[in-house]
Length: 509
Image 1 (cartoon, helix red, strand yellow):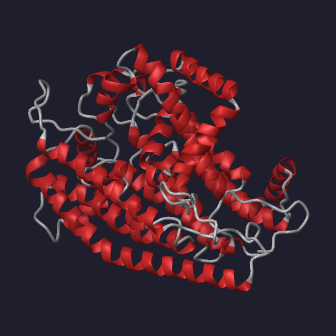
Image 2 (cartoon, one colour):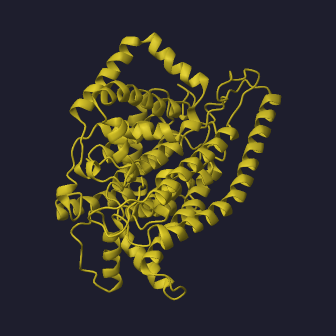
Image 3 (cartoon, rainbow, N blue to C red):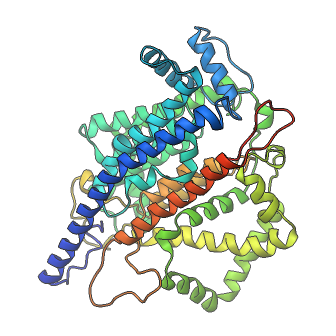
């Protein structure tokens, strides 16, 4: 919802009352839809999981073989044994070990099905009710939990034994605790830091998002206690000063995570565990454009409108030279900083293989003339969609809200910049074009986005102030369901043989 600073104080009482009633109707409608839809989604997920485990892939699929074997070693008590081909920490295998010792008493499923079930429960229950529900109650017209649990890049991994689901759960829960403060400020911040630390046991790059969460904690207190204004440099200085003054209560819980991570780097001599040669960090700048392109595609129901497209066209007409130089800069980045990892070029079990062969890298025309404008527009979407959701401050008057838990679910110019930097740091060093690396950049972006109140293609109404847009939220849900239906149907209906694999292979994200 809009912050107190952004509300037009000149509104008449009648307009304010009407706006309040409209928001109340949207909230009630959203809650009812989410309550009714979640059981249907859960039973659909149970059915798809059943098909995965009985007919589609009842055997380890792609990287599952490594995760399965390592978990079996832990189940057998061989805690000191490590597969050198595994590059991620053992958090998933500890979850699998715990779940196996619970489930083996109540089911006769095979071990692979039991381990996959951990991700299904995590995605459909923990992710939905523990992580997203509190955030939803803070911004009930901003997103629907049923939509984010249906996010296509995550859904495939509800049915497989991969690290992505629990990695996402713990790091986003770290943010949820930091924003909602369910246990009071002191305990909630410590719990947030603990969840952030645990998340790093599933994916090392989550340490970067620990920094983002810590900055959210600092900012939401500094902007109140130090009275942020519209002078950006002053706000940065106030944030730093507030962090120094409150180091032990706000910074130290997360600083411990950073120190432990540095100790891990010194001990391991690398970010990756195991197969370091295949995961050498580089400068894959085009990853940012891949990420923005995916975010633009998945968020289409949020930004698509005639007015939004006109704003992009008007920017080009008003500043043609700037747009041309920006596009040429993107072409230069494509030329200088594109990395084609051999895994992507050789593995036709991922959609990125076909994207690279049929579109992105098809030939020079597509690579530069087609893709550069697409990347430019995607960057525009990423930045402009978040812009109306950013907190603005009065140049003189102090912020009226005095409790951090009462602040709206919005970023300031500081955390908006930090979001872009964290996205850059987590994906650009990776040589692999992996859409699942974009899960966290998308979710941290989407949670803070306010849905456009504009209609899709008609002119926006000037008669009254409109906040939220339940039609867009509904369209977003059905958009995700359409993508999931298509991708799961391709997975189910188009198996193909591999010379080096005994079983038929299929296509996933």
